[in-house]
Length: 393
Image (cartoon, rainbow, N blue to C red; front, side, top):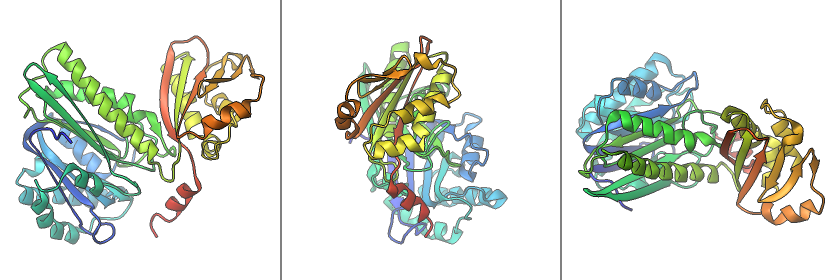
């Protein structure tokens, strides 16, 4: 794995989850880095989300991330905010970076206050792993119900050298983002302005991680944050440079978005829901999310059942403005429905092998308008219910 220049990783077990499980991690830059962030629009924002938004508001450079799993520090009031700030003070004294240059993030059960004694006890061990742990360790430390850690990388060359990007995320449930996903972190060694980095991140998140759904629930802790420390010595100056960096940031986020849906709690399928011909992008998204969040569509995907009527039904109640006779449905490239009626032939026979695939493309055209979108959605399985029913037990 090509790690961007100037970043160190740390991870330890603080017993926030099960004893011995990695659940506390950090990423530290050798020099303060340009920082950008995109956060949940849930009204109940977790303490670390509020802290990060406050820290990033003035455009200051940042030196790293401090991340824990097992405790969300959400819906914890003033005490939660105070605890969040104290974790930064503790980490700063051991990691050797200013507390006001560490961006916090948390994931886990909502409503529980941090056990500050555990935080204090874990700090020496966390610091001891800095520079010895790898990205895989930090990625494992942020997992909750994830079955695998999630990493993606990219690199490209400009005339002054190579630029590298590395991304990690966690997410398997409580996912229907309206900005980002559970927790995602990007590090890059390019030299870029803060304004350009923020615009680029927001743009790429909207095209990738904002276009996934597992269960229709948006977390209180959702965040995507990115650092660019300039340690490669390669400056992003021209429009061509910007376009190339954006292309590779987009590819990293696309890979992470797919891995989130692929690892959906109990998930076995990834549906690529493409909508075109809508009167607006907003209408296209209404159709895509109605289909992607429909329990009936999702259970049909799990059962490999070509019950296309459920897709038509969801599109019909989506609230999008289109004429029923204009809708055209294709599944895996097979024309299923148009002109208000199903296509003739043995549709179940044609669709049966397609529905058994891991990745299934569902294309819905609703007219001749300019609006379009694409959404990644998981299926809904028996395991999803078991995992979430037993989450705290």
